[in-house]
Length: 249
Length: 249
DNA sequence: CGTCTGGTTGATCTAGATCAACAGGAGTGG
DNA sequence: CCACTCCTGTTGATCTAGATCAACCAGACG
Image 1 (cartoon, rainbow over the protein chains, first blue to last red):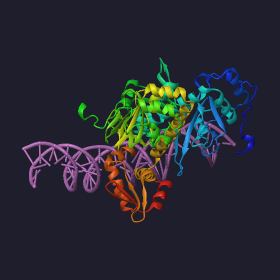
Image 2: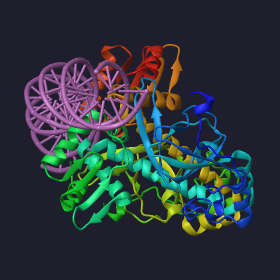
Image 3: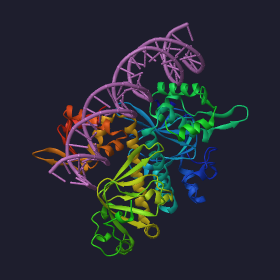
């Protein structure tokens, strides 16, 4: 990638219509929720922000961690690629999520790549600033502790699910998770969901290949549980879906 | 289980030859490593300790969390059982590990059962005491943050491995982990390992059934990588083992 | 109008699950 | 001391979910 294509939308800190943590609509959901006005100003004035196109990487597995990323809008996946090229989506990070805090705090190299799954608006706060904040605000550390505990809990659950549920069941599971976040109930069309991922990524998230996902989808349609049209999913029988999640398979 | 068999070895806190956190050989490896003498006395005088036989539970998935457990000696597994009876060993906790901190800090019900995999000597510190310590010692919170980050990292790795390595490869992997902790190099017998788990539990750890483990073991013997005699394993060709771990399969 | 990319389908192969039998202790009780 | 059952582990036979390889199709894009 040449320097010139690097970032048509890149902006540096300071005053810009994109900037201003104080007015960031997501701030209240983040670890930064109880910073003082002064501290916010410190962040606002030093951060960099940027829009990423789908597929672009915020950082690459193995890179050194220079600070912390904060997703203002969009969707970013943690992707791990192992020695034989096998790629797994370890986790999805939604708007309002602080990214890379783990490597930041433990001072290690990034263990996953962070990839924009949708067009995403992301801020970057450099190490020195975060360090300052951590030393000033006692509660910030605690926020990160809670966050880490939550991530641990989720990863543990994902592990158990992966161990003993079928692909079909896991697919239903993630669809349901997506529905809770992005879904709509429309009187005409019923439960509708715009799936935020391409099939390949859906596959990587579940831990399989695109062919298998494709087949699983067809199955769900044949059993008239969920109907698919491109990236749009219609839940035909929500009760049956819930049933199948809690029960075996 | 009748009340009378419950705990022949149970001891209550106070002065006993088992007690005394100040002299606990494991303390330096734990989250409690930099408590003051006074704080240690507080813990020592209020804790309960007990020996658990293999198979016994410290607590049960779904139970309320009343405090924190600390493994002085032995081996304790976090076991998760899902609706259809499928049991998975999510993690192993070695001597010197603080157990149940997650549920303690988030005030939730236990999400896994804690089961002694070997005879284990375990201390219990009740909620009120831990809360006191947390409010006094600033570094204790940070220790738990680091611990949580480490657990997260490990679980994430386990997840990725489970997603794209074969059973055989995963078995080799855990054997190697065990070797690093329990293994010996003997001039006569080479690399020897006393496996700390029964086959069923080895299976639950890897996420399969005992039959499959049995076959995988036989395979490793046929390929003369590892030799087995009951719970003892002899690594015949350590280089080949490492090879297979880093390379594909 | 070719080429590319993302997705679907078909055919085939295999790792691993599942079911069933069995073998060696280890305890228990007569 | 033997007969019994219980428990753990091993083996065999079979079945299937899912991986893998290959072709193909439709829309996007230069």
